[in-house]
Image (cartoon, rainbow, N blue to C red; front, side, top):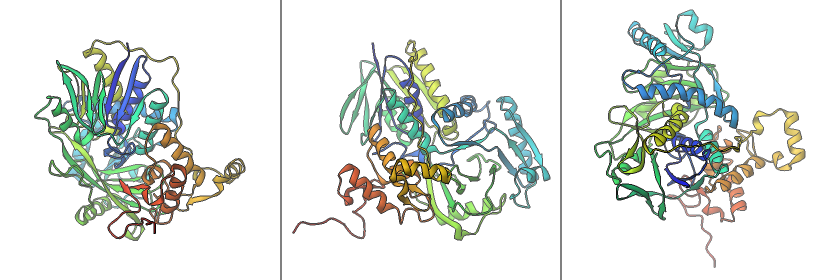
Length: 492
């Protein structure tokens, strides 16, 4: 018997679950995503921190604490296996007042309760020994050695690639309207493209997982509020940039404002923590007030470069559950339904552990016994020409002249990399878009933010797909259609 598992949502949670289930015998995995590509929702816009687990209170949120610590360990294994950009940096939770110091001390205690190694209290000069760029007002910090940083969109994309390589199927541009229940059992989902039959439905729909759960008649009092986090990105060549992950002392709302150097070398500060109305689940606007707050908070702990070095503002939304507790549950009524909802921070960190936990509760609640496949295919994340030596680049160009044609000069992305990104996009069944190429290659993430390379990428997509240039997708719309003009050629 083959168990057909439908996973709703291709963010990092859905992708992690898809990967784990794709490695199991006699399980057919179908990932359903409403966007044209994967990782276009909550998962793409966050700080990219792999938390150690010392900031989770195991008495208030035991499952969150447990899965965060486990996820930190699993990401190291997955990143090594699949070549996902990941670096262990260590983290400094900085305090600038005695009151903040007292607050910070409790996280040293949480570390002991959660068995998080390498956590200690540093004072004064001890902080400067780890990070010279901290502000003069810094009194000390809680150091956590096992904190890391990852590229969330590359991680999600690579997990989906590995899932598909191991038999999973991805359906994009497919929005789930409701979960179909008959006689107390899951029968599948109804989408904008028709009905998909299935035995098990995993609801990992992010900000909309509450509404989807309600269509199955469960968790009717569970509502997800969007919490907005704004960010500021600086040029790669700014100085100073921290070697370790820095952040202010957490508050009841947030883990604090972070100052980090991303895996791609940019200085990033953020996020804010703004609770929006329930119906603002698409409100990713940035505000002058929010951005000013970031500069103010970040300046308390680090020497922030001048604003002339800023290249981008953006914001992301997090699904905030009513009481801060994640909803991860398998139901025997209706049989076959699993909720993975309200996965707020540290959801990115815990994603791999959440996937294995879902596997465990499916076996337990549905009385199933899974067996792993004998052979698991491994797809590595894309390599970058910009990270290679001149000698290695010369060798690549000799093998493939497309490596000698630079498409994005800011981040040194070649035509060969764009073509490889498009090949991978089509292979998983997603739609080639300018944004998809950006997430896979970093073309458009540089100083000019795509003003020079966007048209180059669009032309390559047009050549590969056969679509006219104006129909190439950018930010959910054709690039040739906008508020100013329509670049459609009319036949005379």
